[in-house]
Length: 251
Image (cartoon, rainbow, N blue to C red):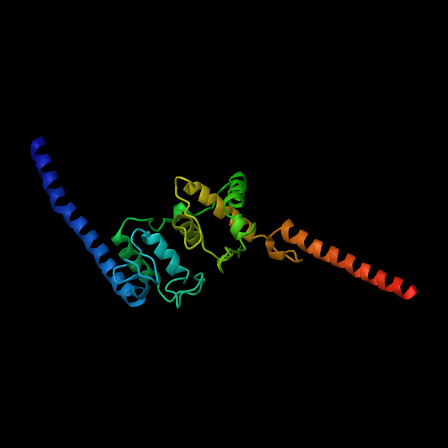
């Protein structure tokens, strides 16, 4: 009876398992095929018919589905024309179309995949974890994105974009894929928990009310000191000129 049971279980598994795997492979293949058609119409002029790259755009082999989801989800790709940096804009593609192109690019070579929500959702973190996220952001990100994530200028006509309206998923994908001038933060250098804490910090400071006054780009003492210097020295110059003219008249 035991041997008969084992034989029956083996037969059932042999019948069911390959069919399930075949169905999954078929679904992935059909999604990638649809993505390839979209890619050839909208992206191949810069990246080549097979994503091999051209003089207008880099090779996409190994960039992964996360890079596609970020670039197309934020409207940066396709670019209308080559520029120093692709600006964020409203995307012309649906979520399904973006997923199809991402599946096609992922089939070219292994790369970072689109994250699950638990990898970047920052709800439920403690105040200490959020504070640590602030430290990580100030150490690794604020030099380009400013202390509160409002962005800033970079050399050669490029810039670090504002993070005020960037979704949590796209922040995670940008850190893992390193778009344009941004460095890649691998999981070995920065864990998913670290990224969650950074996202929680940004969400916290961006949700704080604006109590008025001039933000001066959110750069803190740098811009404040600059304007204090300009106004202070300017006032001294004005007073010095006035005193000189007054003294000249007195003579």
